Length: 114
Length: 112
Image (cartoon, rainbow over all chains, first blue to last red; front, top):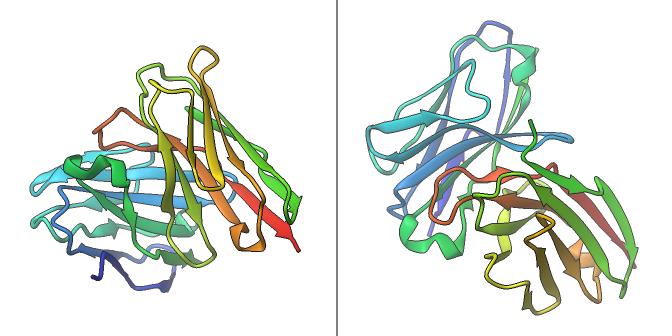
């Protein structure tokens, strides 16, 4: 079982560049989310989706776009990278049918914007 | 604003000791309080969770204590082991909801 797969694991971008962080899950989970993790800030929700075709903003959505065309995939797009977006990004999935088992997180993408 | 506040930011405990991490929340609509454990280079993983209909939940060496009136909950790790060294996050949400709100995290180090 792959669970939640994130690619790439590491990325360095120049200010102003764009890129897409990929996230795929094979558990048929309805819910998918993107979090960023910064020292002393915990994990903060960027965007989330409750199903294919449905997305919504979280706590820190500015500078990021998402789409959910399939149940399995939930890519995160950085439109014009800024140094403030240097962070570790985690994708997570869950299901209302298995809430007690919590969220399944990917292993993260470490992004540096120079 | 930080809806879930976690302390301490870092904690060092001797092997065999008790590790205690505290969290406080603001939103009284929250009714599901999980704790996640994260090892370096990995994503967080669910450790233990509680709902407010009970004041304590125990799973092995890990116990959550919950105080609904004070809007506080804590994680106790009994007989702490070096393998417990990790970052711990408390979180809160409404049961079945999508949005999980995390605390700031506690880096726990267990000295052998």
